[in-house]
Length: 401
Image: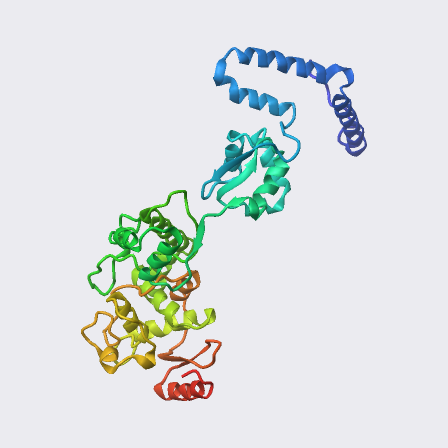
């Protein structure tokens, strides 16, 4: 039988709605207090269900956890018991971290950790890596412990911006006790380390000999246990590719600069080497583009940093610009000559994020020259050589050159 609607339902909805909501809230309160035996019956039914599920063996585990959740979130009390080490992989979301902790016996349920993470706005700052935690921690304590830096097992190293590959091998050897020669050997095949083959293309049709230079992204890395030269370099390459994807570097330089990503990477390395401040990275990149692709007389870079790179590459001592001989400055046989038309063969170091951004999106300007004008590293930029000479005079007054 279908009940007819109360004729006053629509006309007096507000008043009747309040009475109805009050009735519902009352029933909810009664159920929460166990009034009328409702909760007792539910628990009994669930226990009977669990008994049946117990006969199904291991396959019933997930059903058990779901039913357990209906009774409340299983959680430990306190800060835990015996120590345990857990490892959180790169990119793991909170739910995956919860599973790792549950399987290690740290938390009583995944839901306990997820709920605690949702209640803590800082939980988004939990980093990948290894942690020294304790078994049987409450979800709240587990979240707090993972946010405490002293509980992280740090086996990391920092690679600064602008280091050449050779310099990075030396740094890695000092930090890991893996011989630099092993890093050099591993770096001979950039494709095997994860650099896609299409990166080694240029719009000027020059043949590219694949080089790892430029792809060893400067950052702080947490190394896995027992790292190898190959695994460390591959980690750095992976980080480079991730940052390039985040910046949309490939698409933007192809569409906006009309050049190959590899050419923009070379320019980013030049900016990283020449700019004295982060604010000048994009301007130096613009100068490089203007010299090579613009109206510069020789369509060449004429940057001393390329000479220094060749000196290091060939096992010679690097020099300041003032120390370089005319033969070194004007050497046309070097593939990294200041007078080489177009861009040099490879990047000359491993640029950071800001240098990549500067090469991808340099500010507009017709600058062809620049010079550092103070000891803070700031540069003055010029469109003409006459203006450059005036800036050089300022630099001499400041004792920079």
